[in-house]
Length: 278
Image (cartoon, rainbow, N blue to C red; front, side):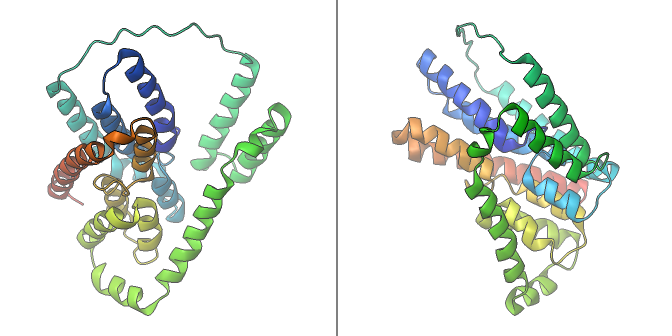
């Protein structure tokens, strides 16, 4: 909810893999459920995932409007996940890790302040330009080597996504299809879910936002649409790559289990949200 679903999985999946190796048990299901939890949990906040941040800023949504729209979906997802976890057999894990000490406590405080300023900028409390300046200043003063570790390829990819989606949205075929199909909240809701299964929920958000001012069903649809196929959410791809890198022989089994769990959640949450109201 705070550091995005991608970062949460980059942090927790490797930790799960370490525990799996130490205990000599297969924790495939745990990683799959972590992925579902990250995708569902991230839906609750504007900075929880990229599509939320885009929709929040693109439509100029007020925080109260955003939380009012997404709250029931996030709670529904968490409740269903909790029910599933209670039905699964758990194992008690006793893992001993070597003691570690936190170095650079002052740096940690500064990074905490920078993080707070970034969150404040998302909600419009402070200028985004000020947040950018303070972040770059902190990096340059505390650890300039971090600039070398940025995934510039990923940043360029996102820029290319905007350019590509902009060009696609301007084609006559897409314009005609969108104008005929996106004629109400239900069509936006189901189209965003379906489109997410094939091109992922972030590109789906970028594309559909060009053709509708009905942001509520779009917000709900692309967050639910992160469930389902392995490519419906970048976070799901991250977990998958981290797992098969360690256990390449489990590739097929992972995809089958992932699909069963995700499509079950996708179907259940879609139906419940539809009857609650879109």
